[in-house]
Length: 276
Ligand code: NAP
Image (cartoon, rainbow, N blue to C red; front, side, top):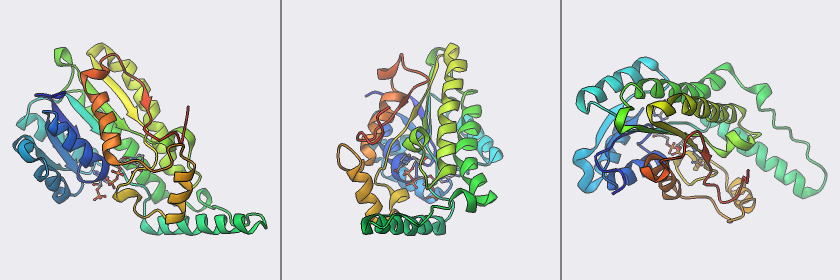
């Protein structure tokens, strides 16, 4: 077992990648604290841990709210007393369902025009229409949430036991997605934060790395239109989207001693969509 007796917090662990990471870490011997904004989904992840279920703990907190994050870490300190691994994973794709619908429509209109051979007329009009609320919500959950959790986690990490922080970025942070400037900015910010904090915390024996997946089949990507799914699969050398266990295994690598000399880096399980 690669994480025997380690205490690991996974934010957004009630669904998709966070659930897959929580379940894999539990199988590898960790005591997994599953955070989510939705406590029922966090509890369902703990329920799914099988034999490791007694080592699981579900904790509700909105990671974009620093007071809730502090309260969550107070609970972790009281109940467990330390933390060895933090996976900053909680996130959203679009601030609203309407945003996703509008983007799917724009995308299909542009593809239709391109196929018609008359030149593309439909403009994306994303950044010019973005509200303050949509921008701030995206930055708040991804970037502020990563900072708030890291700030508290380092107080429970370090010393002889060391620590590992895995920050969930995205290919959007590496290459930019025209349909999601707020998401791309948040994910690129997470890479910059990872690099800076890795430099700072190395002397405390805490490693900090980022994961940059491409399109992965989870509830977050369910709303993406079939045409866009086909296009993005076609642009991917391996010819398909990824599955959550294919990201969880990379998170395990970054969280375990298998990556003991790796810090400040990003790794991108992306089927070749972005080669950097
Ligand atoms: P998901 O299935 O929607 O899971 C995200 C989880 O985070 C949900 O349980 C969600 O709860 C929770 N969450 C949302 N806001 C939160 C908050 N403020 N505080 C605490 N928990 C919160 O999405 P996923 O695909 O697994 O994505 C996980 C991470 O991977 C995200 O950071 C995402 O940006 C990143 N990522 C995903 C992909 C992909 O293709 N799926 C690719 C690259 C990167 P609710 O469901 O109640 O909102």
